[in-house]
Image (cartoon, rainbow, N blue to C red; front, side, top):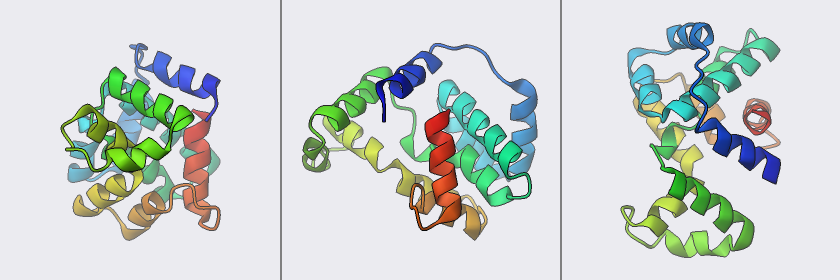
Length: 162
């Protein structure tokens, strides 16, 4: 990912705005357990997810699985702090091999938390599955970024733009 993308992400953490109408519309699409997952996200991640949802809704208005996956694509992250977010960005850019070694660290350590942020898409898929998401939503989350999976590719492209 480019520096400008990461800078926009960092600035979004400080942005207090909330797209209330889009958020309300998006929440109606989720079941109760999916809403609980969504509410666990950091407010900046919620705003980002709603923006990705809105782009998915605008581009593919009939693809409900893509829209719901857009709302849930970051739930596997948990609520990382700015230090962990910065750590994963710098480590990916400067020494990505460390992320494999850091997976051996306890999940409560800084290195363990940073390494687990990289695998958030599979965690998001598992959480969505446990929350009763439709299998198409779970598959989309699991296939995030796969060129061969149209919905997973679209989700990654939307995520990268916003």
